[in-house]
Image (tube, rainbow, N blue to C red; front, side, top):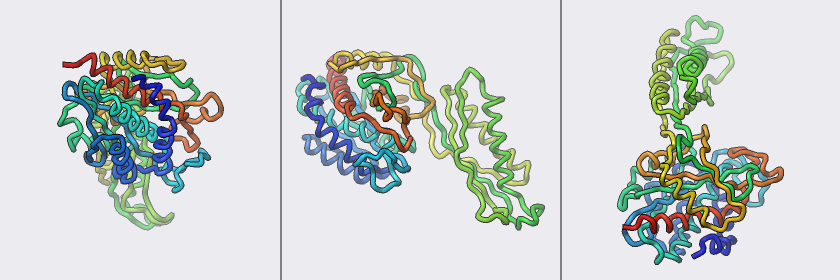
Length: 392
């Protein structure tokens, strides 16, 4: 089967599925609408989907080697300003990262592979996951057995990318760290409240929080090796309810990202030490909790090059691949990749006009639906080709 030609014939259905996810955007781990829609569509396509934690899996094929195809399907907790007629009407959730595309592409890939199941020299396992944005989805599905019964031999995922790169461009990394690790932390500070007129009777948690914030910057400026890429961001500082009251508590929330395992381990340790010691200097207490942790995304060199080769076999107009891409963002597919040889590919979904001026996670971002058939075809074709080349 020419998967690209067949996917183009299914363009209307691809767009319909993508727009359903977009208009019914959901965030986090519990995504009842998306979950139900995926299961309904997979059943229509002749598969037998199963719940896997908060996600969905399905299997096609005839034993042999197993390739896992993964799509995330969660949105972000933000408003949308795209002016699209199918924008999420709640004003509180928006698919500004393109996961609606990923889910739609994998649904159609499942349909294509079911139609051509006799061509499979092995097994394809589908993984539709929630909560990539909160780095919970892959872990949840791993804990519920997505990498078991059958155990994948390899895993493949795609991510669409906005901007002005031409449709048909794809980006990957077959030789190093592709995406940074992330450790999301929460620092709870316990002080002693008081009237604002009597600060000497307080242990001011806001003051402690400010000093912790400043001290944490030195972990990057003075303790991290300049040859490593290390980022530390405090994105939330919460305390108090009135101008004339020193509160009892304060909370700082943020993320640390690195491209190096040893640097990450040091930062995780030192953030806790510095926070606790700084609070103690000013008479308070600091409790550090790591809310979630995801390692660096490092793709398998051999498998990634194989996938790039299979993609080049498809008659995609203006196809062009570029290796060595690296990003300081993080991706919870890394939890799959540290357990299974994996490949992660970016597909350009941009425009060459003003619609291409906005990045992912921007309320005005738009993604080009012309990439849908490309993604679905790449998933299906790559799965068939890899199983054929690696059949028992």
